Image: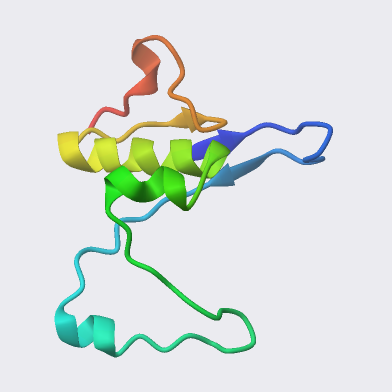
Length: 92
């Protein structure tokens, strides 16, 4: 979960969620159909290559999510950053 505060360009604060959808089988990947009126393409990207595709707040959020998945320790973020102090980790 990522709390995103209001800024001059973002008039309202918000809460963004990142979900782990699991791994896709070859058949599941082949069954992906994009709604043509919304999306034209998708790509599966290795985590090391993410900076070539996304940046800023979204990159920080996804990288934090990948680290939380790797360690098994969920985190609360603020503007894509983990707040300092012990309260940042969620007790599971």
